[in-house]
Length: 75
Image 1 (cartoon, rainbow, N blue to C red):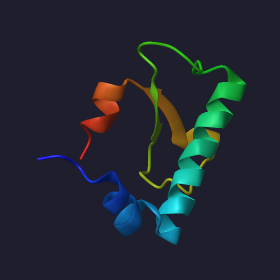
Image 2: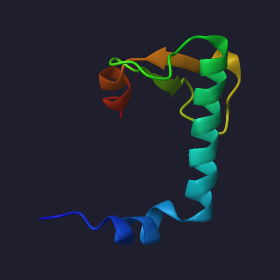
Image 3: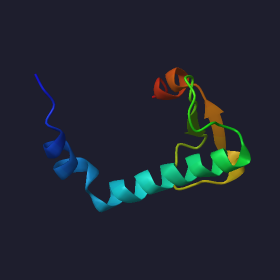
């Protein structure tokens, strides 16, 4: 079964709360790039983990660089 990306965007990704959440995650990534903790282009990449799982909280003591595999396996 193929994914319908237009439908996904319309029903979920275009919601105002999701846009704000995405902007906060992007801001955290840009902050870590500026500090030199992650690289823009690299194979292992590194996800930015929010320790308290709140993407609105972008304080430095709440952010941590983690491997994609480890970060995305957290429930």
